[in-house]
Image 1 (cartoon, rainbow, N blue to C red):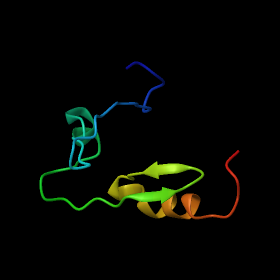
Image 2 (cartoon, rainbow, N blue to C red):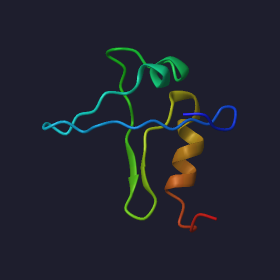
Image 3 (tube, rainbow, N blue to C red):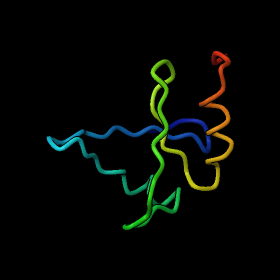
Image 4 (cartoon, rainbow, N blue to C red):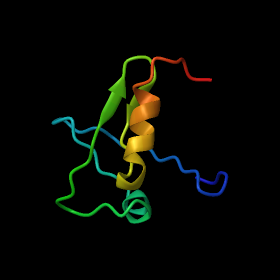
Length: 70
């Protein structure tokens, strides 16, 4: 999918066990390797985020703030 530089979107299919595969390009961009632990953040109004390790703190503050998104 083509978009602005540094912005990406992928689709994944959730299997019977609730699992999905992170696309290879995403794993390469965000340096995700077998055995890595990922953090799944969720907000019923804003959705689910799986932040890369390097930006976790920033995303955590944004996702868990009480302010509505702009």
